Amino acid sequence: MITGRGLLSMLVWGFLALGASGAALAITLPDSSTCNTTGGTSCFKITNNSTFPLAITGAIGTANGVAVTGDAGSSSGRGVVGYTLSGIGVEGNAQTGMGIHAASNYGVALRAEVVSGNDAIQGFTDADCCSGGYFANTGHGNGIYVTGINGGIAVHGVNVGGWAGYFEGDVFATGSYQSSDVRLKTNIKDGRYGLGEVLKLKSVTFAWKNDKTAKTQVGLIAQDVSKIMPELVTEDREGMLAVNYVGLMPVMVKAVQEQQKLIQKLEARVATLERDRAPASRAAMFGSGSGALVLAMAPIGLLVAIRRRKK
Image (cartoon, rainbow, N blue to C red; front, side, top):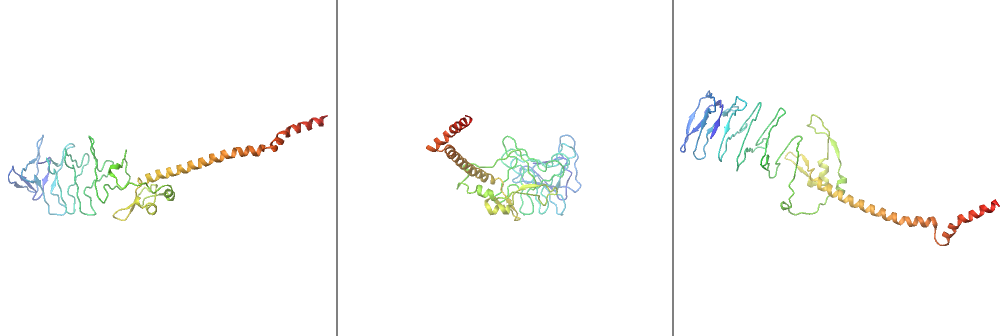
């Protein structure tokens, strides 16, 4: 069942399937069909209980046409609303354009809710140039705003062999975790990269070519890292290299551990040298055997010589 509140027009040959549990009926509306209503009633309410039905379907043959459009004139109204128990509330397909287009001056352009067992919004594309879902913001709001409650996941991305999420620009987060459970891992070995590889890395400052602000960045050069630790470098479908900076953390941990071992060895060596040096210094100062006795009697002999001279 789909309810369109404030539905302005069902364009040319927009068919409304109307029926009960049997075969669907078709109603053809002219291009200028409009509906005005007040109160809590709906302009159109269409129900189709047949197997795999479509409550409302619209088709357009021109390149820039719109099959179904809904406009909500009030701040709390909704242009098009689709409800379903187990199927798809609203579905749009396009060959070269947009399957579903939602725009808003103030408020929510596109809202989807799901109780359980399915996804609120699904987007599919077979072309390399396009996206399954495209959300844009030209002001100071959010291009897409997703909220997860009751322990759920606000955004879940899965892509085998590609990117589960791709962002051009800065990403801000108040917290971040990466999966690291040993139960998910196999072929575990000690890391072979450490202090030696870290010392070979070259830290640089730079600015992105497509950044109009020319903001100074700090980082590494992917081509340099690939020569030292190739596991931390990947290539996207356009041939551009990227560095796994999070993957550098275990390497830095091992580098610090190796450096700490070197420091402890040096500290032990310095302590040994200081212990060996103290007795040697005392022996050089006072001597040993008869030499030590002569050195100890020297002040007494000097005192006797001074007293004789006075007499």
